Image (cartoon, rainbow over all chains, first blue to last red; front, side, top):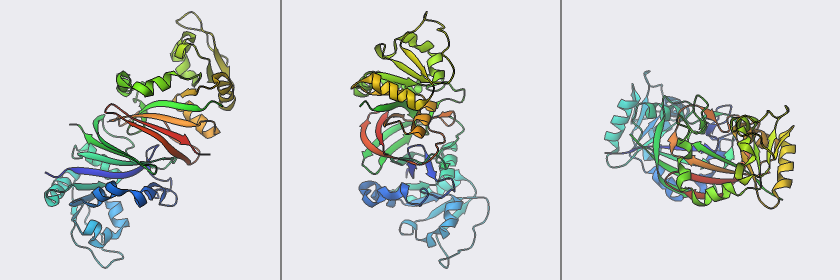
Length: 181
Length: 181
């Protein structure tokens, strides 16, 4: 069964976007600079068999024109029907599913023996609350944002983790945790 | 000149106390369990030449009876005069100083060639805001608290850090950062 893994870049004080909700910081890049020399972590990130992502991200990215991570199926938990393509003339292989648990189950089915790539703060919180997130891969960037949108913010209860692996680089500390259940 | 180093245990989602403000989590211990096998990090923590700590912690701990870390001088940034000893029949070597910058300067003077041990969430935020914190030593414990009191919460601006050292253990990831100025 595929594992579901959250991949997020986060500041040391836990922010994923600046106070104007601009993902990655004021210039959109500070939290993603590590990707230039991200090596094995980048490879793992890109090697998922399916994606679960939030509706807002999906729409802002115009559903990646259907080509996210080489065109793997994308599952968006949302009660509303999908919006039309905005920029890239359409998309395929994007599935709007009513709730996070069903979205994750369908994504795991689609991913085969690869992992399900999970992204987005709201999606992460919902997946944790629903008990359908298996691992976290946090790329913790050496900066304090001081304010903005938080990755975890408030969760319904305490959740124990297990440290799976730490990759120590100058541009980010990549922390892999398994969610204990 | 002595370096000022913040030593704090923190959950992966950035909390230092539970929602009842109980330091270390619901049982007061979850964030401090790593200390049982903390090795070099524990030794460094205990080896400061002076302490800067918040008034609230100092009073809750009855000023450690004046014996914190073997009796090194303790500096408490506060405008109000110190309260009397509550439990341990008095304390010496505890100095109430009006502001964080002066407290830190006096602590550095007192610490000689050792570091100044800084503790407490409010104190950390004030020291960062005043530009008088040199390093952070965060012991990041593999647990999501979900709610409570945050270490950094909101800061006046973005602060760049530099990764100095990562100590990877099962019970905590010890992240040492230098504050860039």
